[in-house]
Length: 468
Image (cartoon, rainbow, N blue to C red; front, side, top):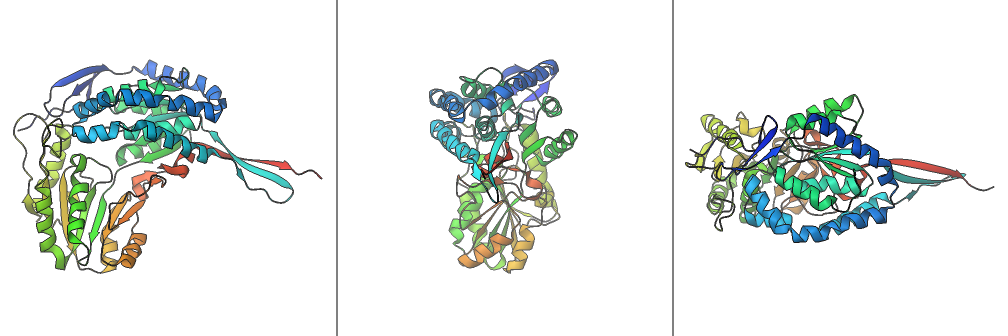
């Protein structure tokens, strides 16, 4: 059986950083002591006013200079990502590369977000300007350890906030590299790094910060909201999901099956917007199951550095065991196992591509986030109302997907699903300019796009009397 050692566990004053493919220790990283967390916040506070006063174009240039460092260290970053959290090296390279272009896009988005808005009327000239909030805490996850931190760090810094950054304890080395690369030309105190687990994050939230940007679990997000309440701290929380895929019988079933498998299994299913509930019209059930099993057979798991692995290990044995427990529970409650579903012998926290059919709504898998490589199938009658009811039968609302041969029906159903983003006859992500929104309990505030960048600012209206 694969190792059950928890990866990235905080043990006393150390993060024991393990390779999830082998269970071997990569490094032991010191946890930032409470006194130094407070000192990091104090340094960020001391730098906040001066950084806010730096002209935008100067801030932008300082951030853009990091592009060359990202390019020079892209392979190093990719190797660290695969070693620390297990994703395939191809996926890690895709995440670590092209950062110069993404920095330029971030600058243009921030410029648009900060542009003054003329709302004059009557006897006053009124402009809306945007001020930074002050000191931002960035608490980020392990599953996309380059993309997700930058999704908070860049808008926070470019809009004039100073930042105290705590990467996930599962990826401390990637976090440290990001801090070095992005912070290389920034003034002292503008970007600070702290390392640790939940206790470090809780201290950071409780300290003298003005806002918290967090990506992670719903449970932790709720705790952060509670802790932030006394100080009325601003929040941007991207939390979990239980994303549905609705497949009508008139859809291109092959395309729908590819979407179902790809976006259930990519990153070993460890994606907040993974497809976790698939509802197939009853008349297409048998054909769709056949197509899904054939697609899933192409997804073998192995060491992320292996050329023939489509999935790496799960981040640790605890996450793997949680997924397996959900699979066992679903089978005990009547689901049919079509492929996978067995623990893998040997070292590493591997779990195979798994397909379950007829997953009942009483199964844990039907309601709780799985965050693992499972394709979960159920059926519906084909009625729009039932499809919408099933898609919305969750407290989450991150993403959703609809496949149908009737484009008008696809949009009609999409509009009724309570999610921040919906894809029709494609996976949900469609534009880098759109905000990334967690509806219902999948988030609070949002990231990305001009409106997402504005979450890191406060609007201020300045009204000047017109000359008489």
